Image 1 (cartoon, protein in one colour):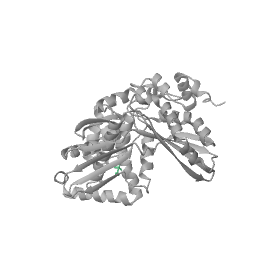
Image 2: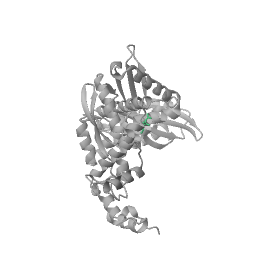
Image 3: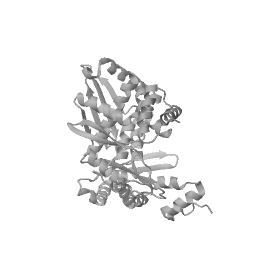
Image 4: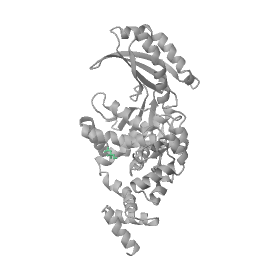
Length: 415
Ligand code: MEV
């Protein structure tokens, strides 16, 4: 029998003992794993299964985001240097030009019920019973109405597939400030017997789609040519055009946008995989395209616009259990999931603006490696004050490697 069988039934210390025996973890490594910071091991153990410790990532803030006239300090959780600096830089230049304007759709989540083995008249049956189905769905979402949300509408379409005809019933629910996965999935499972009764056939999948087309956020900024300079504007437009015409570049272009969006999602306890899935599916709807666009207005300023579906919340899920998520939301000061999504869209746009500006002009490596120097110093074994001294010397020498950092460290220590 494997030493790992029944792992889920063991206590955290028992799991760690198994890892020590089976994978050779040292006492020191166990100490690192279980140093859980503000997220207690007990809470973590209730959040996911088979917990053995807590992973830590840096949390920073990008100050100076002016969005719809309000100033935000944006918490971002990410392991990559430069991302926060880029967001703050994009935001600073945006503020000089009047800041971002942003808007968000009502927080409508979409769910699908797959009904198999249906007859030719499935769609007519759905339509004939739509009112009754809607009334039942409304009843099932009554809990959301006290918050101003609730069931909104339903529709259906037929798919002809290799496994026969399927009716796909679609439900739209306003989930207000929640991400809404549980609300919609519960509705879908509970409404299924009624669908089978009225339409016939058998329901199979009953699940939300992360491609939340009715839950999009948009942000826009006009960077003034007097501030950016015409050459920089041309450079950004050239860089953007490559993404618009080449999927290899577009992938990285969108990755840069998501550096910012995901970091805010993670800081605020949101499901960043849901955000990633929806955003990339959206980008691929008419052939994979950039999530934003840049163009020049009639006076030669640079206009940036972004639109993306954002399935994020400010209540529920890990947001309620993870203390850092709550503090991040407090720092951010958003009042609703819609406001959070407007901030995320603006951060994504700022992030891409800063990346294209750097890539299109001096390149990113100089700035990036300077910020990466501290990582190299730590990897080389620098501690405390040594980290800054080694980073500084690395930057002076312009040669960034762990080996270079080790040599500097040796010299510093007189070894
Ligand atoms: C790195 O994480 C992100 C960039 O590659 C984005 C881009 O190329 O636009 C700098």
